[in-house]
Length: 248
Image: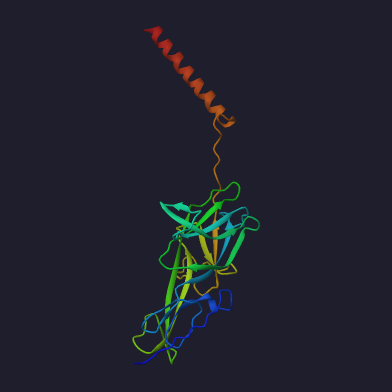
C-alpha cells in the first residue's frame, strides 16, 4: 500500500500573497490557507480573503462625505446583533466609514465562503441624500488549472497527473444602476466589461447617492397655502350652491 504525505505551507492573511488568490493544490503543492484534505490527496482551500474600497459620489461623480457602510453575511449559529434583510438574518463582518473623506478601504475581509449571502448596507447617508437599499454582493470564483510539469492552463480539472489549482476570487456588487466598478486610478470603468476583476488585491467601487426630497412637515408653513386655498374653494362652492337654490 502506497503512503502519501501532504505538506501545506501556511501564510497568514496580510503576508505577500500574490493577488490575494486562494484555492486548491494537488499532491506536492502548497497552499496559502488551511482547509480540507480529501482522500485523493488533494488539499482544498475554501476560505477567501478580499479587499474592498468604496468611494461615495453624487450623480455628477463628485465626492460625497458623511456616509457609513457595513458588509453583512448570512448569520451563523450563535451569532447575535443581527440585521434582518428580506426576512433573513445577517451578521456584520466589515465596516466602511466614508464620512470624513468620502472614501473607505478595507484591505482584507476574512472568512468569506461560497454558499453564503452577502449584503452591503448604507447605515448612514450623507446629509440631504437618500440611502441606497441593501446591495447584494456576490462572492465569485474562477478556476485556473496548471498541469505539472508543463505550462498548459485550463479551466477544468485535469483527469490525470499533478496540477496546480488556483481559484481567483472577487466581491461583485450587484446593482442595475448607481454602482460603478473601476480600477485603482478610477480611469477605467470595469462595470460593463463582463469580468469580475479578480486579479486586483483590492476591488474598487464608486456608489452614487441621489438627493433626498424633503416633504413639508404636517401643519408647517409649507401646508398653510394649500389649507387656505382649499378653504376658499369650499366657501366658493357653498355660495354658488346657495344662489342656485334661491333661483329655483
